[in-house]
Each structure stands twice: as structure tokens, then as C-alpha cells.
Length: 238
Image (cartoon, rainbow, N blue to C red; front, side, top):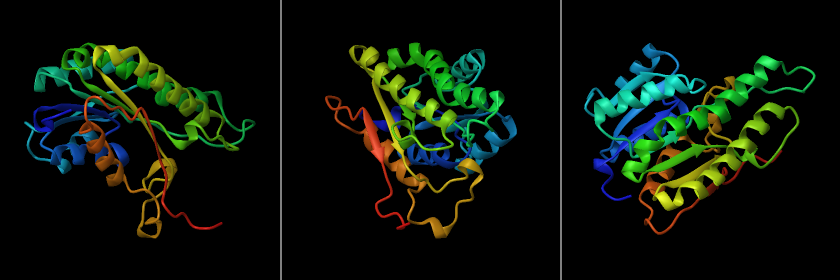
């Protein structure tokens, strides 16, 4: 994708962590960016932190678990920027614990956010992406191929997302839409109620994934890294 400074990205879950770092990286390339989150106030605050220029970034309240909400967000982005070239389906959450303790509400929230939410995001933006011959990136996880105890809901959502994205790639490649899933391991963010700090410098940093997104967008049109696994180079020895 050449001339990134003419492109527009829509990033779900863009108020913090990986999504916010990707937004920052794309803004530095001259792209225009829309970030979404469930709460309008926090979304607008995150957008203002990234840039005071509303010609460059807007924050929108949208719930990926609701198709109409996603459609409304896409309409607002098109109304403001006139196009969507990149969709980063980043919004996600995790509920962890043994199956005996996992509640139906936790299961449904995990699947509806991490998997169905990506489906809704893609469905809502698909016409615009076909017009722009754009790029879809989903943020899965190494938990999308590696299972672990206490991960029934999260593993199911991320295994499903990995499979969904790979099949989506095959569906859309003849429409000149690129599709990639990024699968990070340990990232130094607030995910799972953790607190990022300097003691976790060995982990992947959110800005690393921002740079990776830029690199993928700049890849030659003939080449598609469809699934990218990302690990810390040297995790502590247990």
C-alpha cells in the first residue's frame, strides 16, 4: 500500500494498549485515523492525546458486539474522512479461569467481543474496503494456536479469530483486499487487569506492533504475510 499519507484507518479498541499504539504509528505516517471504544468520553480523550487535529483523528463510541453500532461508526468515518483504506480489528478482552468457574456471561462476552465483534467490524466496513482495495488486520494472539489451562473462552475466541481471518483472506484476495492476522505473545499492556511497567521491558511493547502494522501496510502489493506470530525475543527463564 503506497502513499500512506493519503489513507484512512479505522481502529477498534483504539483507546489504549495495542490499538492506541497502532493509531500513533499510523498518524506518524501521515494517515488519518478513527479510533473506537465503548465510551465516547474516553475515546475522545484518547484521540485528543494522539492529536489535537480533528482533520487527522476522530474518536467514536462504538460497540463491536453490535452490528448496527459498527455500521454507524463506519458511516461516521466515511462522512468525516470520505474513505476507509485500513481496518484494524483490535478490540478484545479476556476472561480466564477453570471451566467450573467460568460463567455463561463471561463466555458470551469473550466470544462476542473477540470473534463475533471482528465479524461485525468486517461486515460493516467491507463495501468501503472493496472500493479502496484496502487492508484488514486482525489482532489475534499466540493463544490462537497455543492452548492453556484456564483459557477455554479466550482460546476458543482466538482460535476462532485465527481461522476466521485466514478464511477471510481467501475470500477477499481476488477483490484486491489484503488480510493479515497478527498474533502477539506477551505484550506490556493493561490487558487482563495487568499494569505495564519498566520491569516488563522484556515483553513486546505496544509500539512494536504499531511499527509492524506500518511495515505490513508498506509491503509490496504482490506479497502478503497472512499470519504473523510475534514473540518476546528473550523471556525470563522460569
